[in-house]
Image 1 (cartoon, one colour):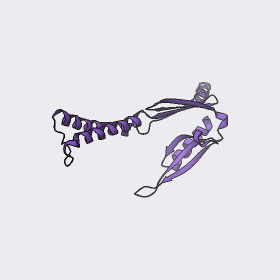
Image 2 (cartoon, helix red, strand yellow):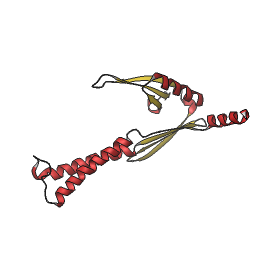
Image 3 (cartoon, helix red, strand yellow):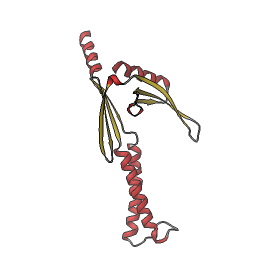
Image 4 (cartoon, helix red, strand yellow):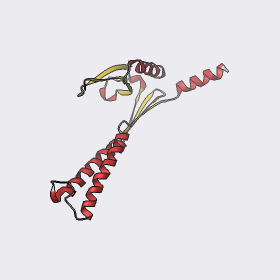
Length: 168
């Protein structure tokens, strides 16, 4: 029995590590809903010949609502489609990035990455500084450094960093 558990653990360690990120997809879906409301208001104004659907804008209100709805739709689609998949395994790091303009993929030997770093990021916010702990697979070229995980607490991110260090 212990031999089977050991073999299973060894197989999981050899399995490629896959990290998916689509951070803004839920927010993009909500924004698409808001954009649909603006487009419906504009369409209603054009069909009913009531171009003054936004008070104070007169006959150009329907055009303004349509332009706002179209702009929000484009932003929502960009947020919903954008994503990234990082696969680390068999001595290679493969990255695939999706966007509204298509897909871009590249790979790099794992040996070119120097270490796994844990950094603390701080950004100003109106309610004070916000901070996150970030685990990165560090590369000498900044564009090839890959974010593996992000969390608010140092204990969770330290555990994730040790887990990634054991697998990479």
